[in-house]
Length: 373
Length: 229
Ligand SMILES: Nc1ncnc2c1ncn2[C@@H]1O[C@H](COP(=O)(O)OP(=O)(O)OP(=O)(O)O)[C@@H](O)[C@H]1O
Ligand SMILES: [Mg+2]
Image (cartoon, rainbow over all chains, first blue to last red):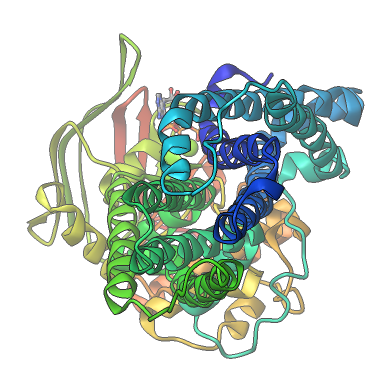
């Protein structure tokens, strides 16, 4: 029932896992290799740097596993729920003719494949960049060079465990989503309550905008996260640049943040478009203009983006102070807010948002009632 | 006045081309009530979609008071639909996550009308304003869809089997309401039906079969109470 094509659609999931695994495995390998050294023989300065680097590796792991990992879980939940929504009627029919929830949801084990592919590619990318990364970290450390040694525990923890966990999570979440009567699934009965808070006397379009926004709660998180990526990580690369860290760090962070942000935003909007095709085609049939349709569809996410970007900005300032704290024995770092960084990150975000919205605007023009329903 | 001239439309299904409309010509006067009659699959819905500017045609022209809508750009066509037409769809097409009231507001909003409760009352849905489409019966959904179309105060109303899901009594009430409105506001009404009795209500009866018009006759309209069901 779930085909490779469906898994390809969940490509975003693989990509997020890839980013998390890449960063996590790289810093974890370095940390483990570093632990092999005996710091008691180092002089004061080298020892402080050694400890700061250990802390830094730990922190990158927290970022990679915590933030991106949490996000990978959201992506999974999102992909599964999208899949269930798209195939609701089919699944309802299966249920109606006697398949159990478990028989239907066990197929979602396949979503673990996405995590496996993402994890494998991420780990390979990590192996490929190990030499450059180690050279960079070793440079001017003042203590013996850390050398890479292969440990099975790293791919086991970063590739196999996530794949298994994602398989289980996929099944579990699908199982939960299927816990409705077959008729509700077939008819696509909406869960009520979400729209109840709507005030009286609101205009139709603003109500629609809110309905679209709250109909898919996970999308709010998604778009917010994309904005956070730009506001936080992209800006952070500039703030770090102010410290005079190596360009490799700058570009690594910058590119991952951009790629993550762009793909998340694209994913979110393509889902939004798919999920609201019927609405838009109907609005068009009634003579609502394309601009009104776009506003109804994407308009609610503007404020979500603003909030995400603001949170990202604050979050990166926090991280920067954490880094200053970590390195305070080694280097006298002073942080100044990078105005350039802020505007470049903001500009990139607005640009991405606009380009993606425009792309779907173009697709919207081709929608007809018959194709959409 | 709507002038339909030699309209052709086909659908491609892979390599097979299926001609659904095979050169249809028809003139509909402003304020006229025309019924389209024909067997299932004869192309009635497709024809309605084509002359209302919902779907592009392959050949021919569709003019409203001399303006050919088939030559309009998408943007102009949208503006045209907004100003002139409304549709009662065969498959209702209600927005599932909006209440009945909000669905009707979708139409009302276009003419700046705020209060749609009277409209819902008029189609017999008093007290169901806050229900979602999935909580309504098929016939109730159909009536929401009728209210939504009327809320838009169109000059031309296209109705694709607007009473298909209704019982006799509700169906008669709906038709009484629709026709009274049509006469009062001089709306041009193009209605598709399977029901010969309903056809007798119209000023004109157009019969279709496999993509062609096979007859087109004036009719002296009966009232809803005179017809059988
Ligand atoms: N999108 C499409 N692609 C291919 N064929 C189509 C498409 N839409 C309609 N058809 C075909 O066109 C023909 C006419 O369809 P249409 O919906 O206009 O019929 P109808 O007269 O409204 O029938 P009914 O009374 O059952 O509603 C049918 O044979 C149908 O199979
Ligand atoms: Mg039809």
